[in-house]
Image (cartoon, rainbow, N blue to C red; front, side, top):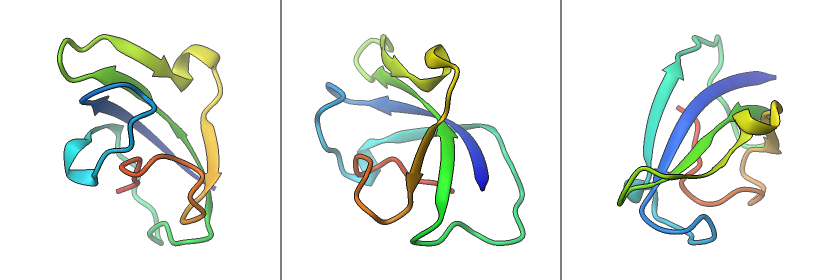
Length: 84
């Protein structure tokens, strides 16, 4: 399982679906893997969602102490939550 830490800055509320070019991703801890993430892989990520207008946080997995786990390519997360 691949662990990635990232920060997401969204332009509006968490429920809004955004295009990938509207999401800012800050990699806080880069991890080199032998294989890139592929559709069907189960991954776990920590994230922090903030508003672009003022930087206020609306959600964060860090606060719960548990990363978000999902299967890549199954439509389980909003568009724009991507891995690099």
